[in-house]
Image (cartoon, rainbow, N blue to C red; front, side, top):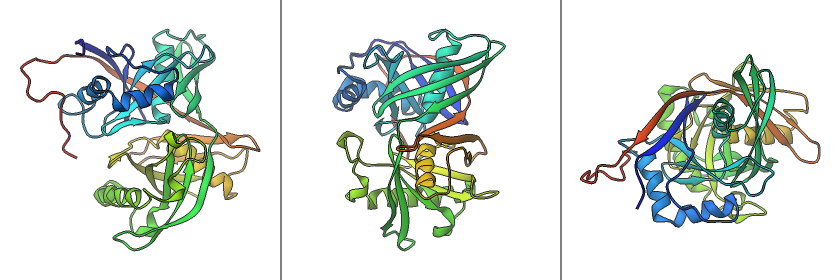
Length: 329
């Protein structure tokens, strides 16, 4: 039985929501965040809380959030289990940016009025950093320092209703398929969104059993998480994208872990050199700026900003037949 009310602190990063549960009223067992994710997937109470907070009428089909959990060891300030309408994800860059802003704004991680503070967070795919910039006591930007990212395959052909589609697959904390929108006769614009969602689902399903959908070292990280449709705006290093992730969810932000995957692809193909920056724009016009460090491995650094949208105290009426909620898509 989950104890209610449940308090959340809500943010958005580039338009994409992130609902933070600082004190989840459920037991989430495991020695590491990766183990806690596997526990959460199979536990009725944890998954039930996700459904209550994510599904309608308290959320919606494109809701996103996270449960704060203990870190793997004292090297991180805290851990987080990311969730969406279909379950628990391995990575979330926009959520990491929101968590960095939240940790500093709430005083959970002390920060100077002027300077840069590292908020180290354990996530299911590893250890990441939200590098929080403050000026005059205000959070002004957050760098998401991702896990090492890499190209899995430069070209995989997937049969679709629009004909064979060639996609690149890269890892940026999760596995992403990437395809130029023009290759499938579409553009990254709201008028094409229904078609982009449908095709994103097709491509993800078409890759389900492909070797490129397997993580080479940890099968818990396997599976294509999202499909990124991208296009150039003002040259090869200014791109617009929309990421269709999970089962048809649309990322309103430029997608943090998806941007890490794009950085890995562009670095591997020689389109993005060390010291270059990628201006990555979303379907709603929000922007991340990305670069990478490293020579033997690519470590993406993605800069964005998150803002609070409110706090909630969610309750459950014991007579409510709509518990734990529903989704219409």
